[in-house]
Image (tube, rainbow, N blue to C red):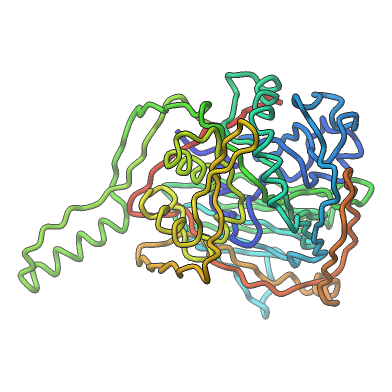
Amino acid sequence: MSDSHQDVYAKHMQHADYGYPLRMPEPMSTLPQSYQESGLQIGDVGIVDNKGQFDVLFNICKRSDNLLHDLRGVPKNFQPVDQHVDVKLNENAICAGPIHSRGIKRVLQPNKPRAADYEFDSFTPTGAVLILPHGAMSTELLSPEQFRKVATKNALDWYEFAKECYGDEYLDCSLYLITGFYKARSWSLGSFSNSTDDTGKIFARRDDNNPDIYILEFTISADSRHGRGHESGSINQTVFISGFKITVSSWLPDPVVLRVTESPTVWSIFVCLLKTCLSRLRSFSGIYKQPAAITVEHSPRLSQPFDPSDIINRFLLSKKPNAKFAVTHDDQWMDMMKEGLTHEDLLQEDRLETFLTRCYTISVGSEGENTAVFLQRKTDGTPDSVSSVVDPRDLSPELEMSDPPASELEVLSSPTSELEFSLPTTPELEVSSSPTPEFDFSPTPSLDRPCIVITRTHPFLCYSY
């Protein structure tokens, strides 16, 4: 079972500073016109479908008679958040230019004519690239804890509402409650997953008819998209989101393993040859068992795009089986990635538990009859540092930022500004452009070429459009 385009893109473009990436940043066309002009908003509750687009069910900051709720209505016992929520706005959170995963290198030839505005060499069979011609702004809820309490109190009602909207056969086990996002004026993105070809070229050229976007060309099989904001000039293209993932335990299916396949990896073959040489030179008597890449297929087929929060929620529910649901914020796996957590660690319960227990405690809370399990950061002094062991076999991607072309640098001149303000119950965020910050891009691991690869999917609410 091959990964969806969103699954491939999300694995390689997830970033410890930005959050969860969307392959389709544009708002859904079924949303009210005013919502399409502004894009996703804090308080939106919905799902990420397997195409990589966020489907908004309702917004907890808006009243039940808001235009957004005309199409589907609102859940039972719905009460909008009746207090101002404080948010932080960074008008230039990501500077203009490309971001790409490790294994992709930008070709720089300043003294030679270039075939394209950007040129990249790829040395990995899987990867992703995102180009933001004008950079991106960010909006972040300053106190997500209040939203977690709202989610804990209403999660079961929200799930019943989602069940009515999507139907049982397409029901996900994770709802998203957005607490932050990065929005861009325009974007171009692409991803690829080729098991037989490790090298390739990527070219990005400005569109002659629309200088706000780049056209991506790959010499290998790839998926690519591009787009720009609303005609009004508003910044409404959401390239990254962050928020709470909510998983109800009673709706978790029990996948049945259909098939397990094994195949040798390039690294395992190399190590095997090296061991053979050592054994002949030094009379090495040890037995080396060649590891293999393992692929596990499950039934039913689950089309939930890869998301670390889903894996953490499953882990929490396994530790607290009496809890009705689990709630995890993206900031928590992002913090653990900064401490060295990899995608491989997520799939190994003992490694995941090591990171969780050193940084967080597993807590259980109740709002009425709703019992939730969630993570709380340790407060008894500084948490133990998690030792990140560097695996020489690790070719997993880290996101890298390249400088924009010289023509774009003129636009980015003044310092970054950060604003803090109160957001009313029905928030309307106005964003103006402003210039460039400096960023430290932390490594973002993925399942590029590990010694053991487990292909896993997680259930999700799938909605056909």
